[in-house]
Length: 411
Image 1 (cartoon, rainbow, N blue to C red):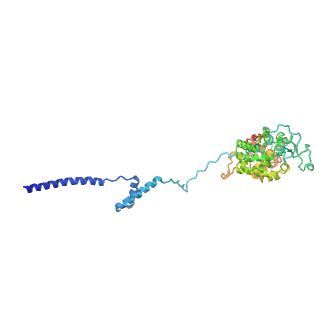
Image 2: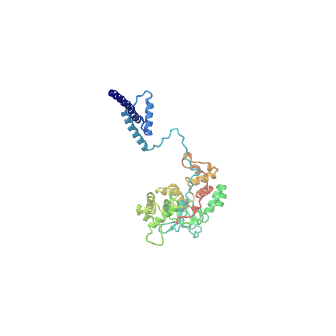
């Protein structure tokens, strides 16, 4: 009996063990079989690896998986902090042409010309009646020039219109300050009658009796022109006022423009206090030195030929061909100046001689060119010796604002 009970107990224990042990094993196996959640990047990398291995690939060992997990984690971290790279354009990509300005910049710069021809005394045209009958000639300076000390000179000191070359060393004058403009306009109309309506509509003040009476101090005009390069009229005026103030700190009521001798010995650093750039300060000091050592003189500017004036002034650093041409025309009042590089003159002449300037464009994206220099010289030759006046009217053809040139905006 006892043996039987013992056997049954053993069988019961076995059944319980057989039931209980599998349940525990099942739970642990479920936990073991449950896949661990991995980063998306790791899954993507593993998927790629499996695809590359193919269907017959051997499964990775636990060590290899651990290594791959570390590598994938590093790749993920690197991808998070990777610096963006600018994509490289394809070689055959279509290039979009840059938009070009429909209208080129017009020259001359009215404010700069106004600075160049600003009279010495007050910055305004002298209201005094010009001397009657003062002789003038197209190829010499017809404006009265003044020295820094205030002494005025004119080319023909003799007021008689019949001054001879033997007495003056100058060409025989062909007109007077009171008759020059009428004589020049008549010549222009005789060469091309189409200019008559333009001349009747616009009176040129530059070469009128009043315009020829403007007193010019060359050093002041040229240095002021350098100050006004590539800046607005307001900025040029401010720079000029500060420049004058550097040499008038004693509180005197009469403010004067500095002499070449004063500027020549002044440090560049001090000149720059007026708002000048390093280069402009050097240009103005170099100009002052040429006036101081006698390379440039009022007498030379008064009586030298047009070519000689151009040669002497263009040798000064900071004075280009256009600046010298504008000074010779509007400052010295020389009558036979033609600026072939001036865009406004080119445009006006092209329109005057029948070209449709609205259809003209810059060639190859370069500089605008309405008419070649040779063509301009040939077409303007019959208007000599009054090509300065012809040039003034060519600006008028295309409505270039030359009114500002007749006003001295800088005192």
